[in-house]
Length: 242
Image 1: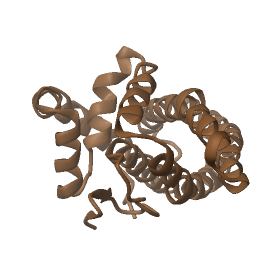
Image 2: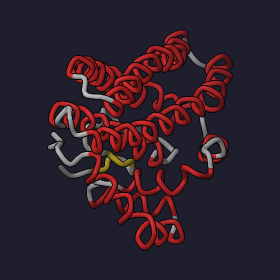
Image 3: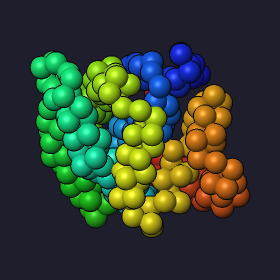
Image 4: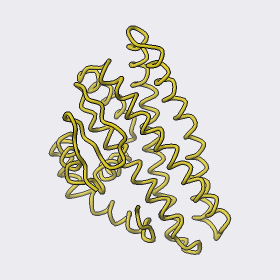
């Protein structure tokens, strides 16, 4: 699959919309692409990994913990910085439907959190013991999580990010993006950089490199990419991403 762009905005595989406007939404779309990719790969891996292969389940458990940490910080940053800024703008000049969209964003985050916790329990169980029942439950939990998160991301891309374009300036967005990024633990930065860049189509990789800048892109290429890809092969060795 390839990426395309419309009105200067990046569109990546699986993306529901790319609202036009003055704000460059590239960082948001890159994160969303990685979330969708990961849940597809996790679902495939859980179906295909032999229950007795403890080494691979331990790798999947570690990988899930990092995925969940990034998603937690992403949603926490939106709830703490982006949605409150938009709520203030909408209350000053928006509509009841605009406010309902923003209320839904936080409500959907709250609905997804218990699903992530259920998946974490499943991965931890399979990393520690042979349990076919736990694998079946985890497969069901992952399918539900993938579908619910996909619906949330689509809602956000179609409606909430349209509000970003209506009510925020590029300067507002740059400040908010910096505030959200400040919440990421330093220890997660190398992983997150490689994670965002992984498996991007060519146009997406070019957009990511432009957004991240040359120093970060060189670090990814020379220091972070190969170790990340080696760990991906270990965790997802039985998966065939669809």
